[in-house]
Image 1: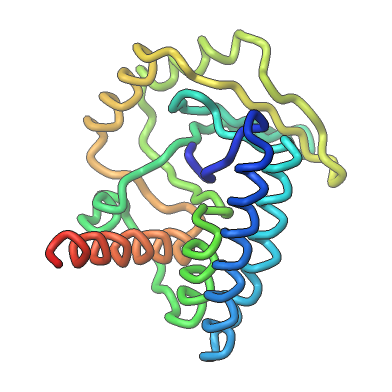
Image 2 (image 1 turned 180 degrees about the horizontal axis):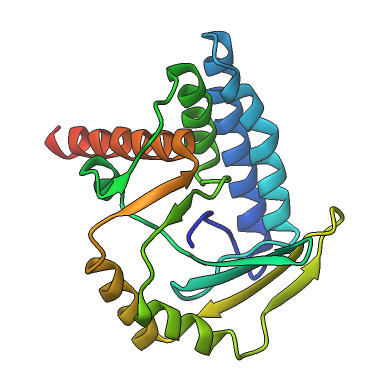
Length: 212
């Protein structure tokens, strides 16, 4: 998914300048949010700084193409596998993404500041969908290949990641989801609500700039 806008190592001076610009701007926003009473902005500042360091050090970088990913997690002998990608906030607002919990405004605001300042969704949202044979076949086929990441973290949990870069497979996945009437939030109601509100706020800002 496009969780972060990352720089490449081909332009180190440009990256360094952008790092400082983002860090200073994020610090200003975070200070204002913190001063006004929300801790999310202040917390997001060191996260933004750490993110930029990962980018400039070449540990994290943006893929050159838009992909969908398969992520498998193994814990205590049990595993679960899912697709990782972006979903539209329109689907959230139009109730195609179904909710089953209420959210608290104070918890939302912290996450809104976090997403807005870092310009990324640091906490993936766990969505569930009804079984689909097309999706199952694509996932099983790609999993026959060697994963691009395969490691066990310090907490003993195994992580495997495959990249779906084939345009035909991506189109098939998108078409399959277009035909699924609804998906359900299994975990991440506050993260989902906050991301949607950041998107709506930015859309309003763009409309104001265009209209002016």
